[in-house]
Length: 311
Image 1 (cartoon, rainbow, N blue to C red):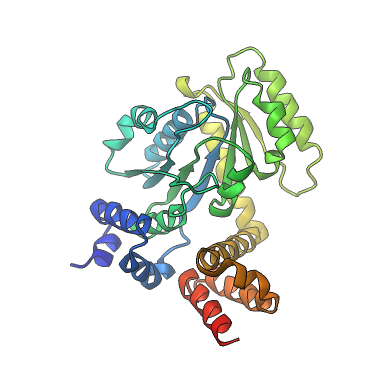
Image 2 (cartoon, rainbow, N blue to C red; image 1 turned 90 degrees about the horizontal axis):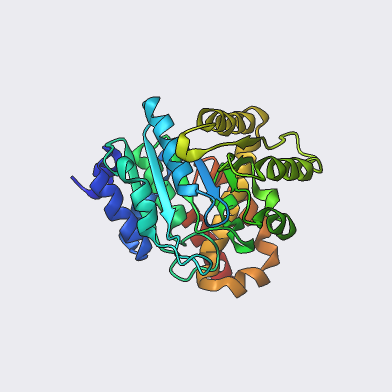
């Protein structure tokens, strides 16, 4: 049985091997993703970001356990949390998710950023596809921390959960940095601490400026005590339902597919594609085709490059 067949049968070892191959830019992994791309698009991809120390890993652990009670298969991508702010290690995440690592219905993978400027590894998008094909119904991407470059999470997730915490002073800084815009759902973790109510109120005040038909809910939680988790999970599901019912899911995925195609092209010939403004319309059509599973992002990128070569 080849690797693709093993992945389709839900074999965890095939998932692990393919993600490693994708991280190493192995051409065989790309060919498998091209072949199986039409099998993707079924999972609800949830990005979790927030300042170091906000308790993202503990929160992820509790949310996944709640989904496991529903019998859902879950994938977790924990981007290497080694941070210039905390010096934290991936081992910390592993300890917090130790029980999940023993769960046959959960696949956990740690990924290093490998110098990528954004908050996510360059191979993160490929890993999401692999887990989607594997059959994960929910895929969590936990980022390193929070910063302006980490808006990358919004390019990979259907729902972005912004985790805030009272007492770190990050709330005001986050507002200044403009990252409030990427949150679809907000969690104020460690809500038993002084200042939690004020942090939630500040977020609500900022959201008053939101003109979208989706007002991000703000949920106070105490992850370590499993308080507020069910309510938070309900908000996350409500956001996905909103995207589906309003047609925004297709629009969002089309836009994200476009960004991914462009990123793939930029890896090879960024300057050329930026200079070829006449190709923009073609990229838009390709992005739509990729989102509708008529094509895949790798083939789409190759089509654009071929056009450039012939220009």
